[in-house]
Length: 318
Ligand SMILES: Cc1cc2nc3c(=O)[nH]c(=O)nc-3n(C[C@H](O)[C@H](O)[C@H](O)COP(=O)(O)O)c2cc1C
Image 1 (cartoon, helix red, strand yellow):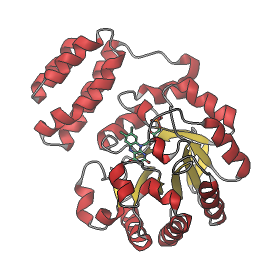
Image 2 (tube, helix red, strand yellow):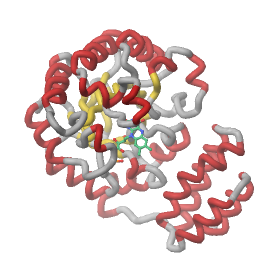
Image 3 (cartoon, protein in one colour):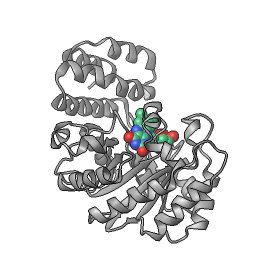
């Protein structure tokens, strides 16, 4: 179980915010396989204050998606607070503040992970958002900007905890590492020791159910958020729930899920876009196929919805 403010999840893992991936289609499939909560991809606060942004399939929460988290990115406390109100109004149940994103264009604008250099600004944003909404507010952090000192991280956590943050979601890499090296889960044990009464959720290098369970157990943290490990692999959620009883999906079962995912994608986007967009998912779905390269080749070559469907049928026997 995992309790984040008034949100109670029956298992201590959920699906991460994944920009460019975690639209309604991916979230619906993850939920079907047992993710108790999902997140839309990060939203730029200054865009969110224009209601049109919620016409985007990646951002609009469905009525069947509760609880669902929104993640906000921005550097201006007032705009972040307005954005928080806006996402709450359209139905998101939790607001996570992004102080972790390492993308160069985000850092250049002094947002995301850059703000680990500015603890006062982080806390100003947190306080403004906290006061503007009635739902749980969490923070996603990396450990430092450049691995030289963790003082800012500790300062931010100490002040956020004092201000009643509902959870700290920590990806234990420095911002400048982006995705290189390994996530340092020992760091998370230290965070939990320092803030024993705060919900600490870990992120980083979680690609198997065993790793997720062991990492939670070994560090003593409260939960984990599954990111790359959930792309094209919704079974990670059923495996976490079923443990030893989990039976890997047959080829046909995989095909049915891929078809369903593609069908949802086709309902969200114009068909030409859907075909191109879905390739990044098939690239990963195909990893479970014994003839991965050949299956991928057919699916990558497909240029129309009909060709994608025919390719899935051909390679998965559905
Ligand atoms: C394609 C992609 C998109 C991501 N989008 C977001 C995002 O919108 N917000 C966020 O906080 N993290 C985002 N992340 C980071 C993940 O949530 C996660 O913290 C990171 O990938 C480490 O976990 P993993 O190694 O298990 O994937 C993204 C990562 C990837 C690979």
